[in-house]
Image (cartoon, rainbow, N blue to C red):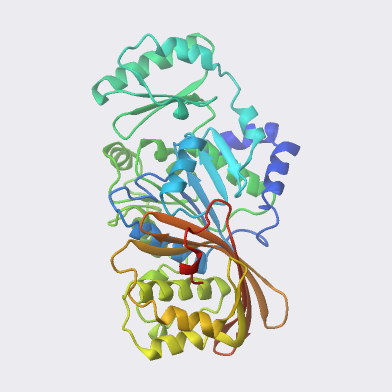
Length: 448
């Protein structure tokens, strides 16, 4: 029903603005045909585990996605956070760059790294909505504590309220706002947060709108997996033909909804793992594709995964590099020799400072750094891996390489030329430049 209703509205609002947003972000032609998998995930306490100081489950998901899915699938973050709050989280956590961001509880949709807004969706939400009236009516309830200014948006008015008062207030507001000519949706989640939105807004409505976009273009994802933990996520699970996972740490209101509405639905599971680990579990449960993160592979030489892709090659190298610096592998000449075998003997690395060095010299320098990060929080991850085959056995690969060392975080935009041999990829040339604002204080300590 939800998808059908949105489809009807969508036919009225879809036009050049929506198409331009999709085109500007490159989503209409980035994937040849339909996405193999589209993951639509809430952030707080779903993709991001705030009780995991090292972000290990998130880093496991990152490695899985960039190694096996980025090239032909879509990642969508659907969050209650405003754009400002969302960007703050991205600066704090090792989040990947999504293809689409749904923010402010489904009232804002943006595309790509540049976050191109979908103005067609924004215009759609103006129907029977008046923010001033909502503010006027909610002011009658001293029990409602306004959330921060950054959480207040043109189509979202947000409060904190105790659970025992929430139902009564929601009933009153719904009735009175309807009498004043508005058509609103009131969502209570996480046992404390109350959001008032236009009737046509919400995470489920926004997802249905996206799916209808893809349907019109003949690019409906082959599989869609929705992931959540709280009340404002439940709408996503009502969309037809999607798989759903409630992470193990889901809130009571979501578990209650599941018991009442979806307990016998085989397409929805309650994971036994927390947050991003639960998402990985669901990928395996529904047989949606590879579900073993490269971070969980201790010995790549003994791994039977028959995958020759630039994304997998990049993720694997930086995991091995991280483990060497953290002394999580044995210190041996054979380990370094194995790394060197993947690099062209005459290949060149262009350091972000502009200095050129032979690969073998860089690897010799790396060999001396064994275990130098054991006393610091040190993690690596790659983002936005893309590749293009430019010859019969030659690939041009681009990605963003992130490095966290203690409280310092840097990023380099990295381009690599690779050649494909019978036994795997060989790195031929590598060039890095600092991402603006991410330059290391000590550039001499930067390696690869």
